Length: 386
Image (cartoon, rainbow, N blue to C red):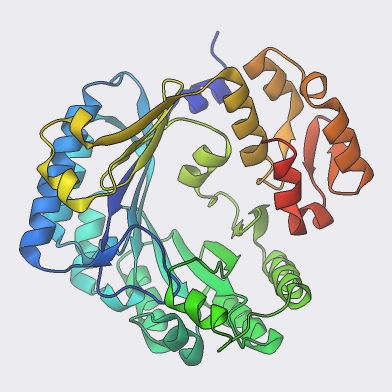
């Protein structure tokens, strides 16, 4: 007999990558670029629909797809007719559940009543708004195309269009940012009442404008003590406002946890479509080319695939552990034993004992999870299992 949790794990997630942006943000190293000509978007949408049909035929159609995530880039730049072509391909090639979570990432500066109505008609029921801040100075520093007022306008438009599941992205730890600056962002975010909040410290990536400024000594990031003070202040405030801190950098109202992202953290299977998209299915990890020209000119699914890696059992166990520990509830040890045929403590006795002794992990009942200190030093914990 297949248990309900096993049935859920057998469900498939789908990720669709839209790489277009109005302009590249100053901190961003994602696979995206400034390209907004309608013909470029049309060509990309055609190829993406073609890939969905081709790769979809290789995977079992009896599996239920219960999450679709359209990410980028700025997917809300894509004309409605192009998005319709892509979503039609998904619905035609996969068994999408009636209650599937279907998310679209959007920049607040690109939303209108018209495109929101189009999203609703295409089955999109969750929006992820890349706000990053409600401070004009922070938004300007990051190079965002929207301002504070547009964040408020976007939320108002979303609610009027009937969206009742909205995520808000927030970033802290910017050069020159004070604790008071971040506290104000937290306060305003709570007042907007999104169903989900993703909050994360600025990651300085090589090759970005922000990286170069820091390397040149022109600006300095907040020190580690201030960064952690900001992080814990957010957790405390969101929890007090009725959100559950369910993953290192995510909080949600009851029932609004990101179903799609939980697939990643639970090592469930998903297919990625589009430029540079990654997949994990049938025991393999594979990824598409990150060359825009190569992707558009590919004549087959094999042509656009950049690499394939078949996981060993050891690979999969390691991934399950360090991804699962991102969830604040941690790893359910009986589920681990059922999935891998071995007890967790039999595989990782010494490193786990040491991490518990250092106050970074704790075992409570059947769960193994990060402590508050472990949340701050999670990379140290993860490194012991990879």
